[in-house]
Length: 158
Image (cartoon, rainbow, N blue to C red; front, side, top):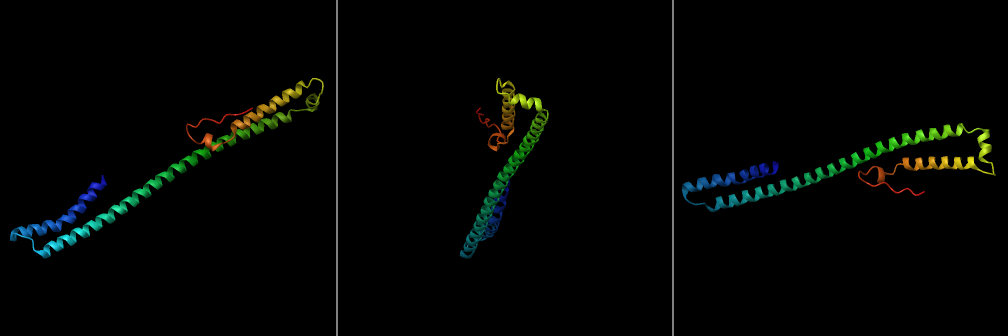
């Protein structure tokens, strides 16, 4: 919207002296060489001003585009930090659960875990350890997977 207004105002400035000179020349019937040279000089000056303004406008448009890009990057970074903080909180809760589970482990359970004949309790402990390991892997923060909207989660290998 602003481009036509600027263009029209510059055109009006460029042609105002020309219109004035033409009006004065119509009363006499022709343009004298000095008036023609003055009109040409005025038009050259106005063209130079128009060229400068258009260059400034292009530079400002580039700055606006760069600012918009930076704003998008800042928003993506804020989202990544929020996601990382949430994952960190969940990992902390999982760590507390692991510590609580370990504190419940008494002497009898430790002996059952080292029992060589059947090793059933050892298998249960290993399964619980694998479950905790899977939860930690799932709660890890991976910016490529978590911060980019619509990105598919990375496959988890057992």
